[in-house]
Image (cartoon, rainbow, N blue to C red; front, side):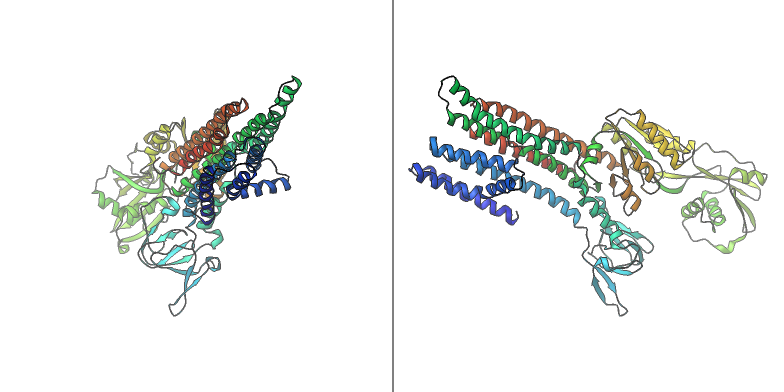
Length: 627
C-alpha cells in the first residue's frame, strides 16, 4: 500500500470512528450539524476540491460532482428538515472505501506490469585494459563494444557472445522458466539474466534499438490503443452523466410543482431527497473504472506470459479470432534442415553419412550444412581429393580414391546411375559410389514439438479454420499440414502471393470474425500488416516482428497462440459481465429511487457496492497463468 492509499485509509478510519461516536451523542440542531461536518470534511474534502476544480475547468459532470451535490444536498436537507446527517457522511465514507479498493486493484495490476518492466537494465560493465570494470549507462554504450556480464546481472544490450559459457533466465521476455544455454558465437538479447558464469559479449545494437527497449516501449504504450468497449464507455459516460443530472433536477422540481398545481402539499424535502438518492445511484464509477482496468490487467497478465499485446483494441480483436493463417518455416517448423531418414542404402548408415559429409565438406548450402550436422564429428579433409561442383545438381568428389556423387536425380542420370525415387516428402540427396547407386537421404524441416498440440488447442478454443501458406513444394506442404491437422494449405507461394491469399480469406470470412496471421516476423511483415491481426512468433530480438505485428509472442512456442486467444476471451467475458451487472443494477435502483422506495443506503450499494464487485471481477484478468 503506497503513501496516498495509507492516508486515505487513515481518513476512513478517523471518519468512521467519529461517525460512530456522534451517533451516541445526544445533541441536536446547529451543534449537531457542525459536529457532523467534522467527519464529513475529513473524508470528503478532496472530493469537494476535485468537484470545484471540475466546475472551474468546465468539466462539471463527473463522479466527484455527483457525489458532492448528493452529499451536500443531504446535509442541507438534514439541516432544514430531518436533522439526520449520517447518510451524507456514510455515502462519502463508502465512496472513499470504494475508491481505495479501486486504487489498490489498479496498483496490483500496475505492479504486474512493473514486474515485466523490471527487465530494464540499470548499467553495463565495460572492461578497461587493466581488467577493471566500469559501470556506465546502457545508453552510452556504442555498437561493437565488448561488455562484461557477471552472474546475476541483467543483459543490458543485444549482442554476440565473445567469451564464456552460461545459462540465461529468459522468463521476463518469454514467460518460460527453462534456462537457455549460450556460448561463443551465440546471439543474446537484453532483458535476460545471466545465471552462473561471466560472459563477454560484443554489442550489436544501441540501447534504444535493443530488444528490452522495444519491449518496454510496446508495453508502456499499450494503454493508448483503446478497444471499442473502452471507447463506448467513454462516450457513454460523457453523455450519461449530464442526462442523469437533468433527470435528478426534473425529479426534484417537477413533481412538487405538479402537486402545487393540484393544490396538494408540494413535499419539497421528499422529492429533493429522491433526486439526491437518484444522483448517488447514477454515478458511473463501476463502468468507468472496471472496463479499462480489465484490459489493463489482461495486457499485464499476458505480458508476464511472454505475450505482448500492443493495445486493448488488439486484445478485443484476439477474442473474435475465427481463422488463423500460419506461415510454415520458423512458425510451425524449426526453420532448420535435418537428415530425417536414409533409404535404399547399400552401406552402413554411418558410413554413407560420412561419405556425404566429406562430399559436402566445403559447402555452405543449408542442405550440405544439415548433412555435416547429422554426421556431427570432425572430418578428415586429407581423404578428400578432386571436388567438382555441378551447379543446381550436386557435387562429385574423390574420397579415398573412390568417386562419390551426392545430389539430385539429374546428377545421378548424368552419371548413368538410375536413382530410386523417394515418396517421402522432403529434399532428397541421392548418393552414388564408383558409378553404383548407394541410397539416398531425406532432408526436411523439422516440425516443432508443440505444433500439433497448438493446432488442436486452437480448435478447442473455438477457432473455426486453420490455414497454412508456404513457399515450399506441394508434397512437403501437404505432408506437414496433414501431420499437424491443418484444414487448408497453399504451397509454392511468393511473399506477394501470401498477401493475395490472405485478402481472399478476408473476403470469405464472416463480417464480425477476425483473421489472424501468424509468422516469424522477419519475412512476413506485408502479410502481418494486411491481416486483421498480425501475430509474430519467436520474435525475441526481431525488429520487423515488433514493428509489423499487433501481438508479439516472445518465444517460438506455438501453444501460446491459443493461450493469447483464451486470455483475450476471458477479458472480454469480464468486460461484458461488468457492463451488464452495472447497467442492470443501476437501472433497477434508479427506478426504485425515483419511486421513493430506495434510500441513500441502497444508493451506496448501487454505486460503491457495484463498483467493488466490478473491480473484483476485473482483477481476475490478472490471473492468466492457468489458462
